[in-house]
Length: 590
Image 1: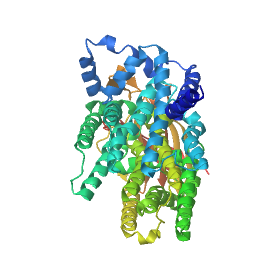
Image 2: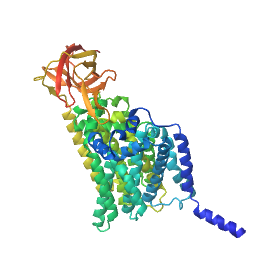
Image 3: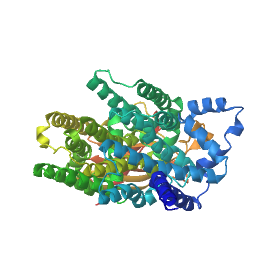
């Protein structure tokens, strides 16, 4: 009997899977949390639930959807199916998705760190086990905000983010000279269909995998590249391009521009700066700042053997602190700020600091492994770019915080990887950062380009003259509540404009033909016998489709002997063709 008991204990100990038990407990906890959430009876859930009923077959719907709304055919096919099943299926899917994010974060960190949790010291094992689970607890409310509590939100943000980690795993395995198993390819291919169906995660997979495979080709001269990995990347990158280039994306953008009325008037430089502002404003919120703090804490620990490197890490943390202070309310108003010197400093820091941080990450790990340094650096830049590119889409305000989930998830993975690196034994001591000439040269070149770009940007965004020749005066425009304030050499203009003739119809896949609240308008001011356009920030009046609140700024030195200015407003259609203008006088308020 003693032998039998001993054998049973050995069998139980051999087959006991602590991770599986932990995940099972987490699953039931998540299901308990999800029990209060159901499908929404408004917004997109209601729109998509009965979509297939209006089409003869799936192919007709997919063709119409791809050409008239979006390239996310795979995601929304799954969404429509889920919405027509019992809500518990969706709740189970979300619970499993969150666990898979934890699981593949742990697998990726273990792979890149080349460390086994089981062989680590007890304290390290406790930290390495609990940290991946502890971090989601911290940002749970952010994680929950329309990202796991809304079916359409989960399908478009949470699920693609999870699938991105799964689809990248075989690529990382191959890069670190580990042989992917057949199940890794199968999971990656299935997950890749969802990953590439979303433009944000699809673009990340395309760029990230291409750079890593390109590096591997250069290092091995093309002799040790796995054909299955190449085939996987090629297939998923083609799907990414198909999704990104969908004709419906342009049509959807023209409809969603109602959330940001001035978007068609912005040039690429404006959109880039807008994206930079959005990422700085979001990443320094109280609920996401922990990622940055933990990143610099880990970098400081990893570079503690070199005092000069510790100073470089502290310099990066100080720069982030300055950005955090400058990203407050004073710098959240579009891209115009009365203190142009502070604004120039803010732009230099906002664009330059991410590349400085990337340099810190690369130099920290380059002496250990170039492929590790490259993987970690690209992961960080992918997180930043996933926020910055939002400036190139007008639905940034419509989507809100859930559009930043990819950033949160990638930074979460990065933090876990960095802390796993702390437990790596026998690692090479980091060398002096300034001795890493290739990395320093790249960062210097990028910073020079940034300075040149900002110089060109500041030059091209100077006030431009507006010609009224060929424009028709309009008697349908009404201007109310005008406020004109001189502020540190700037004019700040606010008014409420209404144009009864300025109504537009949009035709899109979701609503068909409908009236848009979009009213595109531009302010201008007469100065020295010419009309100067103002950088205008419009806000829609939700109760009136022909009304919009306008706010404009212009850097002018106000002559002391002038008490009033002649202002004007021009309204445009959706194609940015002028419909008419009206002039009006106002006085300066001090």
